[in-house]
Length: 199
Length: 352
Image (cartoon, rainbow over all chains, first blue to last red):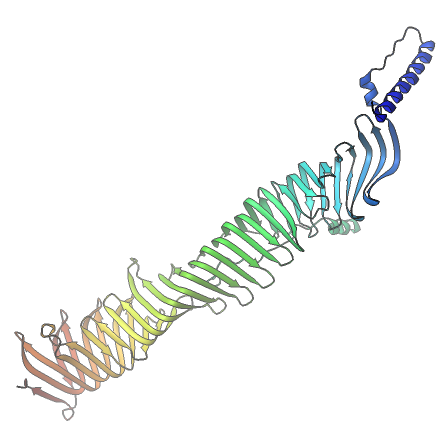
């Protein structure tokens, strides 16, 4: 058994003891009431909770990304961190700011090193691109941002592109939208008649 | 009010004339080195005002200001259509290049070419390779390997196998002008042909260095050693004017060193030629058949007599005016009008 597992087991025993003790106390006050706590419920209880703070992730001392949150719940057994009531991810490349992803909520999967966002997701990149959607997935290892739902992009030239399905690098330099449609601020001067002007 | 201004600044303004993306399978934005490239692929459909653009792939090179429309390109509105394999727009240069099976259709004309380059600032379009321009209203077709359209001046300069064909209402070619260079102006109503000019009509072939065809005036003026062959008649002079009616030859006028010749008898190998000379000559045609010739000023006629394949000598007439009447393509009458002192007639019997 690894050190991590032994710590986890100890924590669970301790948590069970605390809960059972609490139950005994309350049962003492109420007649014939039975309360039991199963493993399912235990998994739903976070190991860690935080408010209005920031998580910073670095690699070899260089800032890679930061997560600003209103409320954070960490589930150690699932290796998941849930962010509620508003979350912002700041992405950096070689320590330089690249883009930010804002959402109502997000889940950081520590095992896969990826973070999913949902609800009012807004992306702002340093190159001026904006993206709005309801769901977005950022994969740190692959350096990709994807969405399989309806997305709206406003480019730096103020072109508005809608589509269903989106993929990009985290710098939002190269990206694609499936089934696109939209409006640009552009007007192409096109010629159709070559021999003479219209009468 | 202030709120409206702020909203106006934040929300992109959608202009009726701005480019709209109606459909594509994929929109891809790429940064290649320092160049930003945006690419639409798969059944691309864009609109811009009343104009619709359709193609297989559309690429925008943002920094270079280049648009590439690739594969089955159609650009059309209510009045005009352009089809091509590819259309490239070089916005910074004000240049547009349509390549591969280019077809441009307007209410006034249809153009077919391998490539068409539009110079927007110069208001000029150059068509290259197997160019064919059809003017349905004027019943005129221009062909050549290069057509340079100066659209502001409504002039098209056709070079490299240049040709203009004028059709009648039944669609039968009535006039064909071939030259090294053709300049078509006024919506095809006026054509100048330069160098190695050949004008062909159903019964006529004319050659010269320079010809001017005016559809309004129904005339073709030929200069620079003009020559006409009409059946067995060869006509030459300093300048020639052909008058047309419904695209058919009605009259011809030769000015300066006018000369008409025809073989006296083709069976004898064209040994003798009948000749008409004068300072000016008028030809009258009916259904493009020669009916009358009027020779004026120092008019001379040499007519060889051949009977039963036997040469009988020559008649030489001279006067102020000689009129030759034709019947069934043969000389019927020769009338000389002249001052008696000037008129002369001599018969030369065959020499031994």
